Length: 127
Picture 1 (spheres, rainbow, N blue to C red):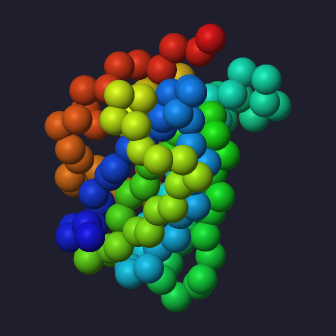
Picture 2 (cartoon, rainbow, N blue to C red):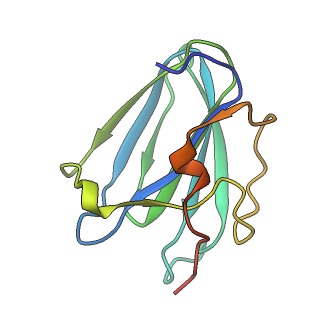
Picture 3 (cartoon, rainbow, N blue to C red):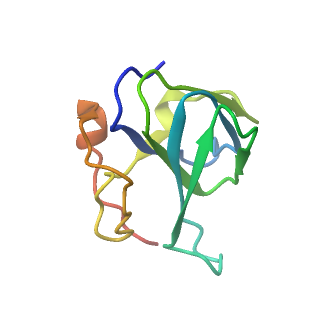
C-alpha cells in the first residue's frame, strides 16, 4: 500500500542470472507505470514507455526481463500487485535513479515521496 499521491518507487530490476519478468496490476487507486528498456540488442534500447493503470480498468503490464520498472501514484491509497517468474534474489536487486539523464523519464507529477534507497542508485551505464 502506498499512501500519498506523487510517491515514486523505482527504477528497479534484477541483474542476471536472476533477471525477472514482472506482471504488474494496480488493484487500488491509479498509477503512472514506467518501463525502461535496458536490453542492448533491443530496438527500443534506452527508451521508456509509460502507462496509466487504475483499479477500474483491469489493465495490466507484462514487463520483460532486461527492463527496469517504476511507478508514481496518481491517487492516495494505491495498491499494486506484482507477480514475478523467478524468486526474488536480494543480492541481484538493482536500479537507477528516477531522474537518470540516460532515460530522461517524464514523470506525471512532482515527486513528493521517494525512498532513500531509490535516491542512492548509481547512474545507468549502457553496456
